[in-house]
Structure formats: structure tokens, C-alpha cells
Length: 193
Ligand code: G3P
Image (cartoon, rainbow, N blue to C red; front, side, top):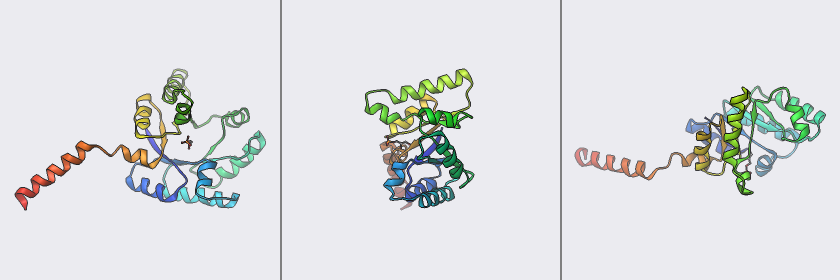
């Protein structure tokens, strides 16, 4: 499974990239607003800045909600950098805009859990359906809230999970690794000084 970072924060993107685990970045208008990026040109520049950090897909979401607007905006975003993946909302007009064959479909795991639905179960069902019918669209699990979600996405067979940096770092934490390493170093020092 590929690891994408779900943020527009350049420092976090650099940090995840330096960890050596980053396969791409997803953004959305809320994440861009969180970083204080406003205005069409600043947004475009920010997408290019992200593309210059990570070697992988970088999603840029259209603001338009009508078919013509989505196509126009999507073409402008796609022209910014070869790694830009245009993201459209899963509304009727969005489906029309994506009908040529979407690279990814993106179920929002955490938001489904928030309303007492089962986000991981949906990921699993989409993976099975796409496999059965031979669709090439990849399943990009989003709205990942914690490390356990990431593990469940792997078990469900998701192609990609887009995650907060803290959830990715959580994969690296294990108390037995810490205590084991401390013991190895202690034993080394006992004989080597
Ligand atoms: O990529 C979609 C994602 O950012 C939504 O996450 O945590 O706002 O539900 P969240």
C-alpha cells in the first residue's frame, strides 16, 4: 500500500518525505485554508511547491461544482505539474467529469465512522468490487484518523491511504522496540565501556 500525506503543510510534507515513506500528497480546500493559502494564484503556487518536494501524485481539488467549471479548472490544475491529480467531488457533475476513467476513488473512512457507519468496511467492499469487475481505478482511503486505520486499510487491500503525519509516525512506535534497543545498548556498554 502506498502512503500519502493528507495535508497542505509544507513542513510536514518535507518531514514525511525525509522519513522515506512518502508516495504522494492529498489536499482539499479545507487543508489549503488551514495553511492560510488564499487566492487562485497562491493556491496554484502552493500546489507546485508541494510537487517540488514529493516525487508522487499531488491532489488538487476543483472548487467548481458544475461540469464545465470542473473541466476548465481541472485542465488548469493539471497543467501546473505532471504529478497533479485533479480531485472532483463525488456528486453527479463530478461523476460526469471523471467518467473518462478516474485514477482514484477516495472513500472517507473517519467521516463514515463519525456517523456510526463503518469506513473500513466500505474500503474493503470497494476493493472487492473493483477486483471482481476488473476496474483499474485505485482505492485511495482518506479521512484516516489514526495508526490503527492505516493497518486496517492495508488489511482491506487499499491501494493508497492518505494519512496525517502523526498516524504514520505511530507505525514506528513500539514499546518493545524502545526497551529492546535500550537493553542492546546497555549490554554493549557493559563490555565496551
Ligand atoms: O482527504 C480527505 C480528508 O482530508 C478528510 O479528512 O479528517 O477532515 O475527515 P478529515
